[in-house]
Length: 345
Ligand code: DOR
Ligand code: ZN
Image 1 (spheres, rainbow, N blue to C red):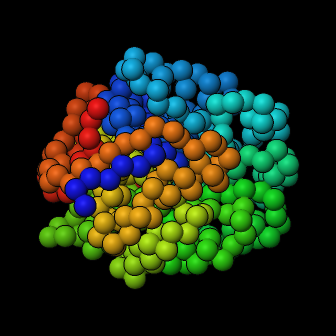
Image 2 (tube, helix red, strand yellow):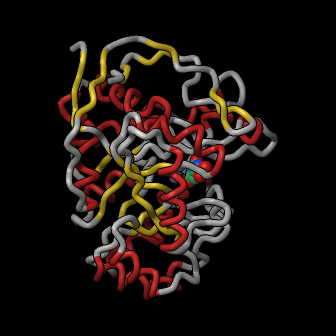
């Protein structure tokens, strides 16, 4: 096959940052995707509908005139989120979900929830109003091995949550383990998961290839090969409750290449091409369009996109770096070959 066409995809998990940094990355997503769920972990976080509206305007102002890319906004859940905000989301056409970060779990999560039971009353409203809860699914207990934090979160936090709020729609974000795959697969129709390109392509060896590789460090951290295989198996199966969420998360080079480097992989630049390579290698390109363009929209209750994109079988090399505000950014798989290329119209 020399080319594939599919309905324009959506990225159901994306970090755009803000200001000059955002200006440098937003077009990478907009040229591939019709829409993206925008993560709210700015400094300070986006905690109100009013802030989300203002952030959306800033995103739109960075786009070229011809772009019809739509940012789908989210709020950052805190211990103090008011019920009135939940009600406002239900009436707002631009805010689509609430993101739950356990306090301290990842980049800019300091304002996250300290004890999930504190926000249980909000979940009642969210369930009634059909507002999805997006979950960073890792425990923060430093006693728990970092490679086990997703599994333990599922057992300790997610299972009781799902049992208690039967009608709450939940997306377990950027899943990394066979435990998460099984949990979502066997779970109710109200439960779905996003999968990143980097967790499909790399296992944890990529963190230590001939030395430490800060640009492959993200959270949840890469896992062992058997977990990657479980992710590949579920996307190859075409299961409808698993969909594309790149979790592209840009950080300046010096923030990554540091004694305490930030978590986050910048994959937006070649996201759809990398996912296409994964599906091709699995021999399931026929399952690609549903994963990239239908499953997420269906779960969120959004209309499917109408336009199309085309990818061509062309080998190209991912650049070593890009400008990023007053610094630069090193993209995922910098300097490596990619064998699909988005056709520009
Ligand atoms: O690797 C990550 N980077 N994981 C997250 O959960 C947050 C993200 C970021 O914002 O940089
Ligand atoms: Zn993320």
